[in-house]
Image (cartoon, rainbow, N blue to C red):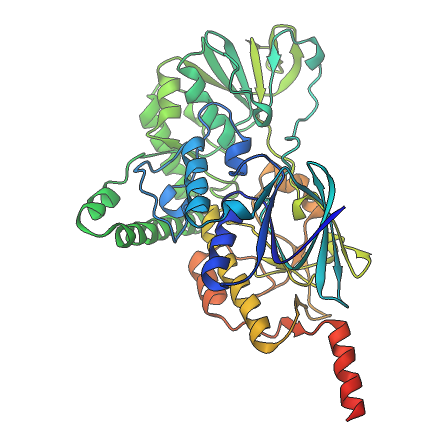
Length: 496
């Protein structure tokens, strides 16, 4: 078994992992690091998903890195463009030599006596071990192995093709086919207009409506600013403009949910015409932003419906038949291809078995610290972005804070950084979104406390002030020496 020792080990070479490596190079120069990637190339989510129309549902001025301007011009970039953007970032910073592909982390064991992690990895030539002083988990929050797929009665009788988006093969030809997409989340809203261009017909089958809003694919303000100001300055101005707009819409939805709901329904009615049953198909029974909004770039989703190339059904499935889907209402949807866009399987800590000083980590026994670390687990941070804004906004802040923490350990001569909550602190479940994958995984999520730094915030500016400018020694984060060093110091003091 090969053994490799480095200072910082990053799990995942997607948007978060490459972002962390950049911050490490800039803020902690000289630190040795390695990035482990289970797949064969960079990109993470944007390499895994290859289904038709795959794109970001956040604008690229906020989804892009703060340190690397997005210059493509498209507000909502497609998967290949994002993958190229991340790859270019890695190449321009010299990271490629530090990425080890085809290596899946299986377990991570912390030893306080040595103040280091031992990570066991399934590599291309067998097991490998890595020893690291700090571990950064940039593997996202869902399993890459398998998407969520509920049981459908009669699915074995279906004579067409049944393909989950997470397993999509780009060579698959769906031209001229009748397609039914099960689900109404971001994946379904992306698939429908993309596939409607060449399919015979595409039907989206939903149990209940989702908030879908048309958004422009060009930012006129950004384009104007870019003409008169240097690229970096123009990018920063546009980025903060979009952050403020997103926060305004979110806060408006929280304060006046009925007002926002009426606005979304009004927009759908204007796009689809007076004869479309908007109340049935576009009026959710939950408040705006209880679940994530779905974006329809330039209203492409509505345009496909209005053109008759696609349709939407709000109903429940009775069973899958040989030729399609029988609904409980009695209606039958004919299909050559069924796509269950039914969501993700949430997975924390890269799916690894994690132990601290020989004790297995049970996530529900722990509390989240600043949305980036977990209580009583030393020298480990994880990338977990916003659910109400662009993922990367929180990742950039997290990476900054991790680098500040590493530098503080160097400055103080300590080896261990571990968040420790008060023993009597009340604990409560994380309040994220009501999306299906969060609901299904509540039993496996860590807890949160009643206030900062133990409560997860979804406010970029509040986080920026606390994470970027707040004190590292905040009363919750404890800094210690490795046990063997502490013992040696005690012996020396006794001898003196």
